[in-house]
Amino acid sequence: AKENSEKGNYKNVEFRLGEIENLPVADNSVDVVISNCVINLSPNKRRVFQEIFRVLKPGGRIAISDIALIKELPKKTKGSIEAYVSCVGGAILIDKYRRIIETSGLKDIIITVKNTSACINTDTKDPIGRDILNGLVENESLRGYVISIYIEGRKENNK
Image (cartoon, rainbow, N blue to C red; front, side, top):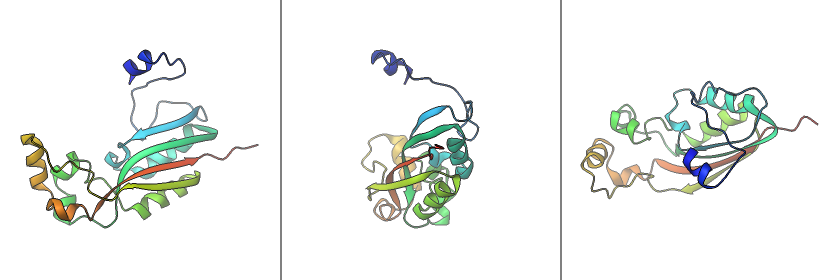
C-alpha cells in the first residue's frame, strides 16, 4: 500500500500498524475508513465499528468490502481452521452485520450485495488451496452461504 501511494505521488495518506479493534488514531481525525475483506477476521466486529465511529471526523465516510453470510454455516464448517484461513469462519449473517453498524452510530448505511456465489476460488490448482477447500462444506453448497458485500456509510456532521 505504501509503495502504491508513493508511485501515485499521494501526499495525503498515512499508514499505521495497529489492531483493527484498537486503532492507533486520534478521535475525530479521519476522513475516510477503507477496508478490504478484513473485518470478517475480527472476533469483535462490534468493537471494530465502534473504533471506526470514534476515529471518523464528523461527516467522515466508510467504504468497506467484506464477506457475510446469508445463512449460518454448518457447525463443523464454522469451527474449522479451513473456514478461518479462507475468511469464511469469521463471517456473520448480513442482518447481524447491519445491526452492528447501525448501533455504532454510523448513518446512511448502504449494503450492496456484489456476489451471491462463493467468494472463494473453487478452481484452484494450488495444493494448499485444494486442501483448504476440501475441509469446507461441499463447494456447491458453500455458494448458498457466503456473499460478497460493499458497505457505505457516514458519521453525521455535527453542524
